Image (cartoon, rainbow, N blue to C red):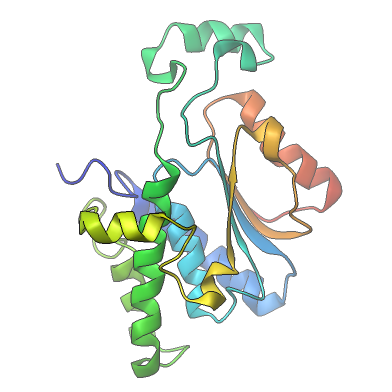
Length: 223
């Protein structure tokens, strides 16, 4: 059923189709701030959000922040709600350390997608339909759900890329992408000054609160 280490393993087309018009609204209305995904997993939607910034000339002026533990689910006592702890304890899907993906894997996929878009920029206009469709194809999101997958690609190149953070990206893009590794109560709101779009993908109410409420109180957000 495809590559288990792909950045999108299910339902990315529908989710990306929801994000794209929101991003275009941000650009059209001049909403100030960065893009944030809290709960990255294998990186598919973060990559898509970064690519949207890139092809619209916004990656650099705006940053793309990726907040994730990169070590899976937190321990049960992380949740503040007793009923939620009981629910999580009854389902091995949410056991401590489950649903994890490495930061190296996410960085590798990001560098590949944004690097490919850079190489095509000279032949496609910034606002052209062709470029938007090429973006969707490169992000593995065009066509029906699950139709497009990434693979890890060349292992030697991947190791070379991951020795330094985003070493495979050009300077402009590496300045525009930031990782926030750790649980949300350790990293958020962190150094982010202002956000234009926040996407939260977490599996506990505690994590959702920790990701969303500080931004809502401090800045307001569009998600």
